[in-house]
Length: 184
Image (cartoon, rainbow, N blue to C red; front, top):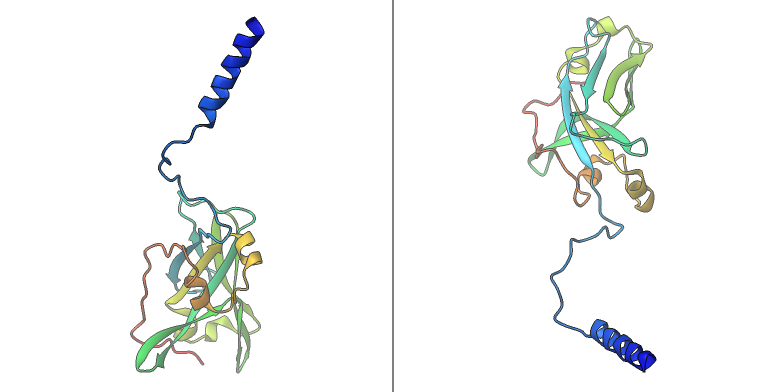
């Protein structure tokens, strides 16, 4: 008799658990494998003898960069006319320029704390034109490595990077310099 009561109780519990009711509210959307939380920062500065022809950008204290993240740096190379619209032309670093007296290269390196932009080459830096040293604008893109590995993204094309869904432009929006950067 006791076994029959336990069996009846067990059947009652199973029936109660297997009942269906109205669907509950949807949960928080999960990662679909294509989501990206990337961030783009902007920095502008002047390369000078006093700063050893190098500039530093410190990542904000509330921003966490991981060892596995990919950091790409673009330099505003020129502002060109595209169908009557002034359009920024960005190039991925490093960029090499052949000058009359040697070679100049814009380059960078980074840690999880900062990015260093620097000039190197065989040219005499004292002879560089203001267009090659002054008001240099950089965009730093920090992207998860697994996303880059999954997608076929042309990292040389800044417009392809900034058009990635869910990328945080850090309230940069779009901007254009009124005057084209003079180079060579």
